[in-house]
Length: 85
Image (cartoon, rainbow, N blue to C red):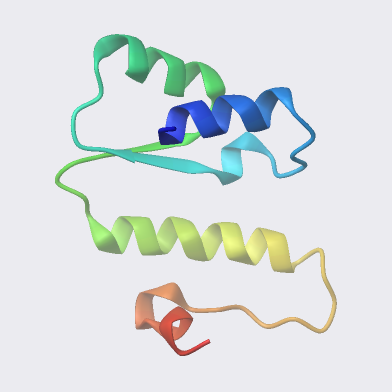
C-alpha cells in the first residue's frame, strides 16, 4: 500500500484527522497520482525535499493539534526534539 492509497482509505473511513493536516511525499508522482493527491486535499511535497519547509509545516500542524488539548507542550520539529521523545 502506498501513501495515497492509505490517505484515500482514511478519507473514506472513520479517521478524524482532517486531510489538510496530512502530507504525502513523493519522488515521482505520475500525473494521475498528483491529481489524486490534490483532490484529497493533503499537503504535497516533491523531491528534492526542503526539510526546513517540512519541519515548519509539521510544527504548524502540531500547534493546531495541541491547541485543542490542555496541558500539552509543542514539539519543535526543527530542533530534532521528536527524536528524543
